[in-house]
Image (cartoon, rainbow, N blue to C red; front, side, top):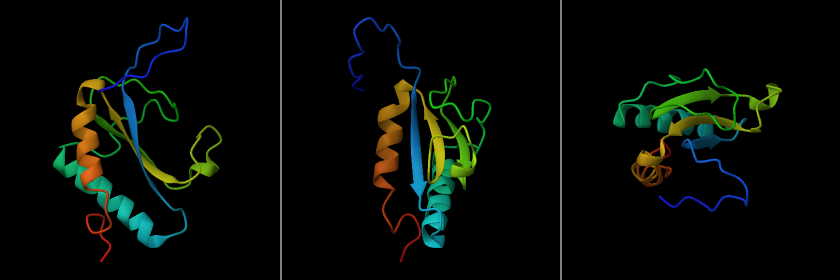
Length: 116
């Protein structure tokens, strides 16, 4: 995976990445599609939904494994949450980034998410 160049004088190294799956807040079809996507990802990758929530609402969490984080239906009601629309988050360690992104990109379409 390509890691962007860090700012001069910054010695931070990536702890991992966060994959966000989003949906419109007031759209029942989009909300159902988000739930379907997260359920399918949980099953396919053998993950437990909302297993890693201790660091919520950190925008830079650092877990030691691939894990599904919080699912938030109204983040605009949570003062410390930077998101403005419904989402589910997945922490992805650097070594698993390419396989998780490949999974997500090939299963993000409307048919896979429940639209007919």
